[in-house]
Length: 106
Image 1 (cartoon, rainbow, N blue to C red):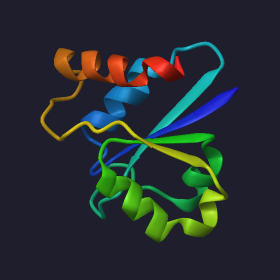
Image 2: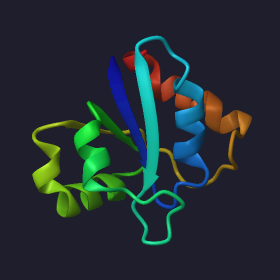
Image 3: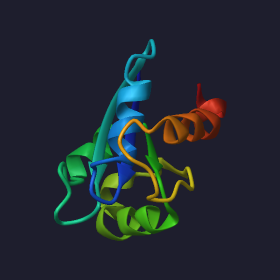
């Protein structure tokens, strides 16, 4: 079972969309979190440890994870999907972009 963690800033739009989209794949468990203090579901060390692969929406998210959760990473892969905060939750354009950027992992 693969465990994928999707991370954006506030865990309101991009990462929850990715979690919903890919959470029904066979042999994949998903979760999402945000790096901001006011995130709906704030990122924790436990979530970082839980994940096999962490997908971040922007490079700044990867930097924040590497700074705050270095001891929890244990060499895990952190993949930047390079998706700007320009979309609504479950926006068809966001879903299409997520599908394209995640294609090599599916």
